[in-house]
Length: 208
Image (cartoon, rainbow, N blue to C red; front, side, top):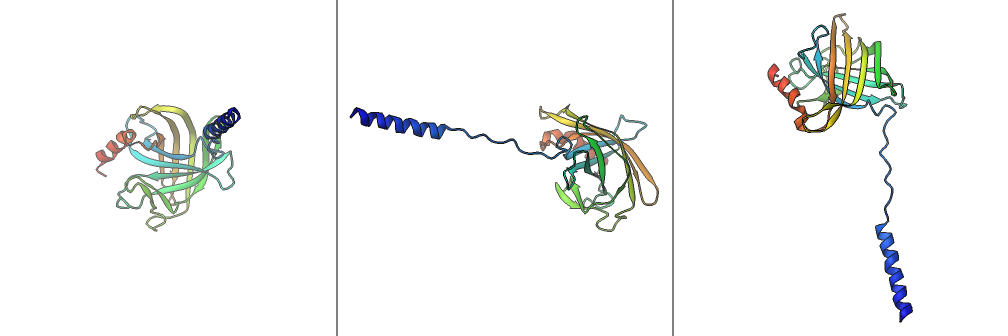
């Protein structure tokens, strides 16, 4: 009888150990430029006066096909919907050099083109660009990015958490040789509606 009881205790104990066993969950893998990639929302400022924003942009950063650690793709989309009537936005995509240790990035007069789609803040999804719809030239642009920097946990958000900050100077040369030049300052999109308040207030103030 004692042997049977001991046997049952061993079985129950073993079952408990098995049921309580924990399995290690591997950390999710990230790209070689993981501290850069993602969606950022940025105010655009005139270089001569950086007190009040003059535009709102969505910046998307993603790794190259070969997952290079010294370069990434960047897409810069103007959130002003006037030309495309809230549907088609103006955007450029180009390759940017980066340093993953210092979290800096730059591009010097690189070729840029209008991607097929960009993130549309009004539709809250990817949507066709002006260039893809042949409403503006799709190719023939040049872009320079200087003083690009990502700061980890650089912004205190309205939801009470910290978000990564981004800042860079941006110069765009159009196919007709006209230029646009801004300083971008913003943060990684957290996904929390509370953190978008200042950006949506800006949109409302423009009457977009």
